[in-house]
Amino acid sequence: MKEGIHPESYREVVFKDMSNEYAFLSRSAATTKETIQWEDGNEYPLIKVEVSHKSHPFYTGKAQFVDTAGRIDKFRQKYQKFDKKAPAEGESAPEES
Image (tube, rainbow, N blue to C red):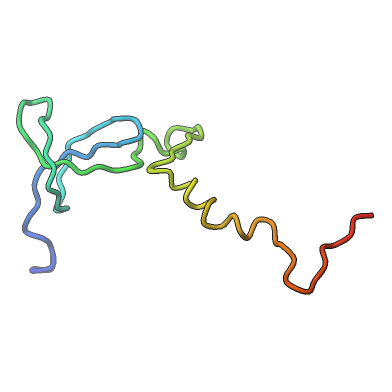
């Protein structure tokens, strides 16, 4: 193994899937300011994730609607102006037959 390329700050961290409240303890070098009390009574750093193996359709075999922070609504509002093009100035709307 090549020396000096791996982080030194590996520690136990709790990852929590925010779509279904599933949490698991693993090792990571990711940084976070939040902590959580784990089942063993110890306090660990908390990393919130939006999708895990308990909520991803590939692993669950079923589609699941996950809309975190209204991202779908934000997308629709941003691009609704392209949904129906209004005729530009000087052009007439297409006639229906």
